[in-house]
Image 1 (cartoon, one colour):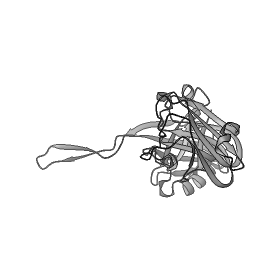
Image 2: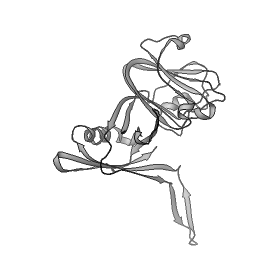
Image 3: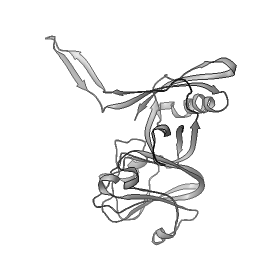
Image 4: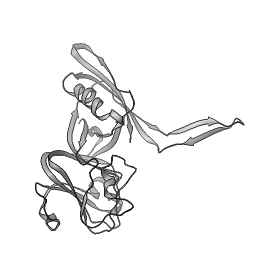
Amino acid sequence: MAWKLYLNNRIYGLTPTVTDGAENASYPLVNVSDEDVQTVGKPNTTATTVWRYDLTAAAAVVGFGIARHTLGIQTASITVKYSSTDTSTDLWAELTTYTALTSGAIGNKDAVISVDSVSKRYWWVGITGQDAVVQIGEIGLFGLVRTLTRSPRLGLVRGKRKNISRSYTKGGYMRATKWGPQKKVWDVQFTQLTRTTDYAYIFTELDETYTEGYRPFWFTDEYYSADNYNPAYMVYVEGDELESSLAECDRYNLGFRLVEC
């Protein structure tokens, strides 16, 4: 089992076309690809709702993720399909299925799944079987997945950031102010990484591409997973927390802090 980093969300910032059902105007479906789990998208009906993403050109997709959803509560399923042509809406059933997640498989947990790479231009996401309208905070169709070797020496330290600031009033009373939702924090230490594989993925690609402006990415630790739908988190590397050092035999150590988005 290993860590996996899911990068290059192909549908980031794209506005979908609703081909079946309807979206709730107060919770537009574009919210599911804005890289903000606090903004959610919702259908406006319990009927099957399908939205289509046009990537403008064929692009490889190697994984699918879903966050802050209520599939488990609404006993709904979500299915991803694809096509190389702009198929009319009444052919939804004839599209090729990429992956499907049922509420029984993932409940309400944030999850990702790696699937064999498929390069197509048009991608459909459909919600079926709702007994009440579902919400989805974020969806990812990832163009890159990096599998990292689990550290042989140092593990993963988990904590919480409660986002509470404390100050004192003029009378000397302590005042606590909550300025945001509580978030998970991970202090990660990897050792004995080779220069050209794990080390290069994290320190070069991740640092230069995904920590610029704190753009989030997704990760999962499959060590704690009992099924194929691995618990996942959308995170970013905090500030200048990414640090490296050279170890013996041209191997590298890396340490960084991940903060939940």
